[in-house]
Length: 272
Image 1 (cartoon, rainbow, N blue to C red):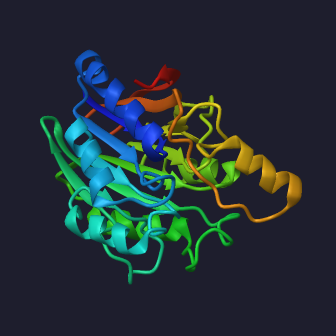
Image 2: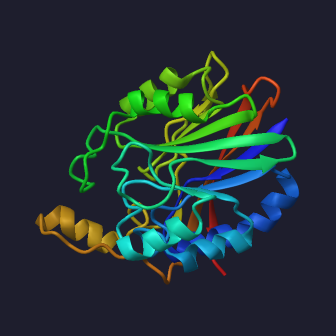
């Protein structure tokens, strides 16, 4: 059985600390074949840098996905996407002018795993400067190009707002990929399941970030925006003492590429 561990959106320093602290025990207890994470919020809540990515690589995470904020720190993100193109994937269905690759293949003792990242379209038009292409058509073309006989499992991170779009995307890919994990909304959902065709699915894995925050952002700043209607610059509570830690563990039959089970974990942990 091929076991994959996937961390939901890691938001800023509190999320990075929580993952670094928890991962050694998780690795010892679960013995996963592959460890993945969404990192579009890695560098102080938006974007990713070489420095922050390397923190997680040293901690033991092997592969990474992005989202609509992956290019928020364009210069730094491009550097990370170019240096770590083999392990950090950008969304497939955006302009190809961006740096980085839209697929990664990981060698495990149970065989090769293909990793992809797609953006939803619903409600995303005001959050991303470029046109987001249709994910359903894009993923079919992407699979035709990259899913070969040597690939034993395929995991896709669907970074989207609307739960309906996520659920539909999961059913569209049921039986075609091993797992579809939702990210972006930072709230873990209680619908982890194996779809009829053998695809593991969850609408949102949740986040790894400051507890007592609003999706990883200082709650005071988020409240100010809602109460006044003014555009307030969001900030990450780097002094947080507690963090949310959200991830899923997926077991996949490497012979069929179908998932056998998916286990979601969400806990509050003290940051040391």
